[in-house]
Length: 165
Image (cartoon, rainbow, N blue to C red; front, side, top):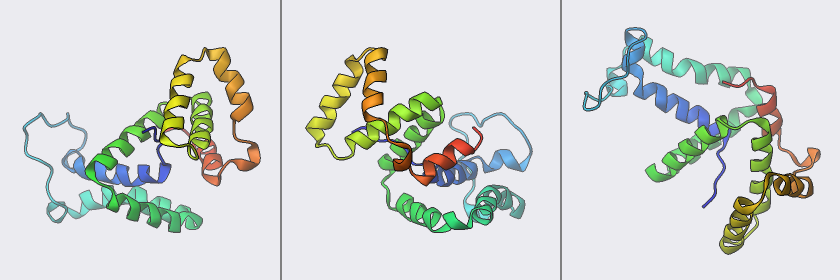
């Protein structure tokens, strides 16, 4: 199923990624641990400095964006309810989204907006048509189906205002 990522899960994924990388934070920049090496320590085994390094980005965002706190909590709850496979797909989608240029993101928004109300069969048919389209046909489709400025969410506007990471 075609899924587009959601940015708030990025915060949770970042925190989880940072937690997994905690040993690297302890002694400064280091090479990645070789396969088969001992897993990172449990939260309780982290030093206060390691915990602070992991939590600081989330705390800073929490304090900087009070209007987003409820959304952040909602997304954290949703992340907790995801299966490991759903989390893996969400992380993959977030990496894909981060690698897209603005034009590709607009295409993804338009496709997602169009697909969200389609049945599985209709969604697959649209995917197949999209794959078969030439770049010119895709541009024409985008002109007919792109979300209007007023239809875009606050999150989309915030994504554009935020510098790429």
